[in-house]
Length: 192
Image (cartoon, rainbow, N blue to C red; front, side, top):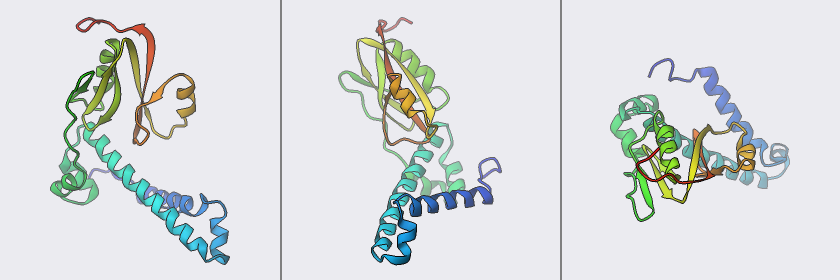
């Protein structure tokens, strides 16, 4: 792992502190209740369970994002401190889905070329309805679509929704993918 890939010990500690703070403070009054109410210990267990499930999901989504950015299983394994085989066995994904009817699969695409590919598909009435490592599942409609990718957690969800954007999938990290129809008729296939 290169220095650019590693979080510093201070950054790692800040992440740990933020998670611990969220676990104790998000259920209102839990911190104080732990001093006097035995049932609060079970609330703490449940809160820690939610944090653990979310951390696991974020790790899987981060690895999917790294794979989409072109990183090898060997590089991911080094970051995780395991072999490439162990990383792939634990976090490998199934192959992209197969096209059916009014759906098709845009693959392979990476974090570096997927937005241009989605823009081209959108002009012809195709819009993303799901995605995974190196692919987007597209659905056909009679109008053009536009897509955007936003770093998750930027606070833009309300603005995007108000502007007519539709979140493609709710559990996503490190990016949220959004699509919206433009109102223009879809261009015939084979034309810009």
